[in-house]
Image (cartoon, rainbow, N blue to C red):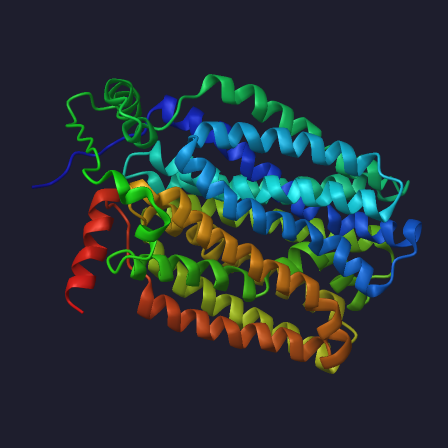
Length: 448
């Protein structure tokens, strides 16, 4: 029987946008350092290792945030968890912008990292549970679009303040979206899934009806029979393990294919390629940020049309080719190296933006049972940030010891491994309800 075409409601779009401000904060606060580090290096006379620490220490906070964020989301609620992150963003940013020593700067960066780690799983989780199946891909991917807008905004702010060396103002600008999100959270509800887990079925039904435009649509809300299902032990049960490993794997590959060496170190990469001033390097980086935003918009349309798995395949093939060409350009160090570097990085980011960028976060918000979804997402997000930390901490050291070309080719080889993983381990979830996805894992486990 053919299903009626479902339209998402203005209410669903509104709550998704408010939650996606967390994605904007995620993108802005992880990327603003790419321009600020050029001036922090001068003001604090940083060594190469200290530069890597300033960039990557935020990820230590994100690791902890990802781990505890899942616990908060399952025990205290998705909405409360988002509230908590905005407070952390505000506190951490104020500490960074007023710091006069490396130690205080590190403290502020760790606090902001905590917020980023929590919101990176809480925002897509909230949106997924507030979306209908037909549009869940696009709505959850609004969070990734917000991340790319945050990244581009960070590049624009960095460029604006570059001529006056105002790194404090670069960080301070992040207070504005944090405050907007804090206010917006007062106008959105808790998710039906969490309300049901707390026995608030009537309230959950009211929210569910607001999510569906077609009032005749049958709303089915199930209450978990086993109250122990939310324990940590249940995350590692046989029926959950394949989903857990798939989520962890896609989260790791999102990072170890090298995206955040571009996000964090793009101005430095462009300087290596021949851009002489910090301002021109940051301007070139802004071009990469624009491509990231535009292609993520394309992904919002494609993700519920082509599906998750085809986009992952196309994206990974394109990313591998772009990294290979970039490595060749640095190897031969041609006169047009700066042009090839810009084109290659733009191509790489474009393919990432239609694949691993939005799809990895979408996959981990879809594939887990509702009772443990927050904690399972927390585990996957923890591995995401752990991989991010390793990549960002080692990039400059690897370039110094192996050479730029070899490093980019190494990331390309990892991309090929990621392509194999997608083909073998990632299911297609397009158009399926969260309950149908859970049944898929149970059936696949039973066949083994």
